[in-house]
Image 1: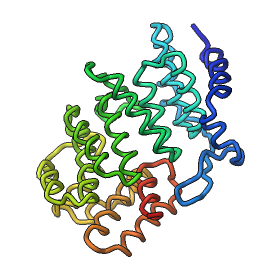
Image 2: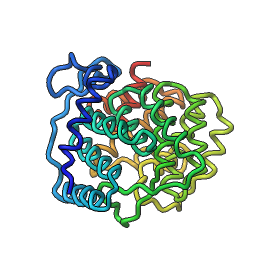
Image 3: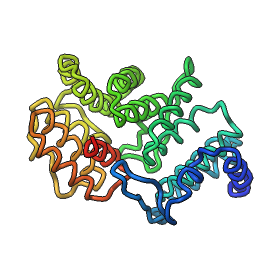
Image 4: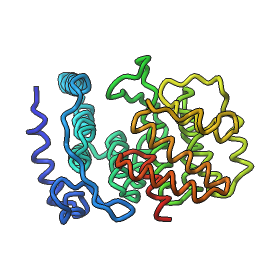
Length: 310
């Protein structure tokens, strides 16, 4: 079996030497263990942690199996995902960039690197990667993407196409480019094959339409959401859409047992809901609470951060 550290090392050296825009050079003046600078100007740190045993073992097994089957791209992706799950997003980007040197026409590598560029607030670089991925997979059949840890029903829900359109839309949304975001969400809805992914796209699509002033179209989005939809993963998005639709109240979806990720997601969405209904001070208060939570890699956190600087 090949040793991935041996494979990656020369490629990392090549990447660092040739690409002046790599995270290692873009952020070389940051303190040790710092990952990036937030939209509010804060230096963001991460404590690189060990993974839960079940997750680490699963990724190691998937990576090893990929190597045994000569699926080198898959093993590269799993190693980079493992690095990102530990909180070392800059190194994950370097790993993916190294793999791109070897496999420049592999859309999955650009899709995963773009995701981590969003984490580091490099939205323009993320958009470039997602557009590159979309250009490369145009006309090709979609590919299911396996989860790090399987969901409750052990059913992978997302794919190369849906993840690319979802994250491309998010990068545009975070830049305030709402019409471009809506274009990505519309393509993602076409590619969606289950209610979880449909709800994820409808959630951001509704907000981007409202942000762009397309209120009639936004109302039509809500017509596609029903209370009896059964979610496996995207419960928070579904609950927020029910709030936007006037079916659920704010208090119905708040729970002390929510995870940090749930709280970031719900916090941003509820802040948005208050804002579009004219309660701007309440919206800002909620977004600030999300920001103060410190869960800075969560999309709800990044979106709240973007609202606070606008």
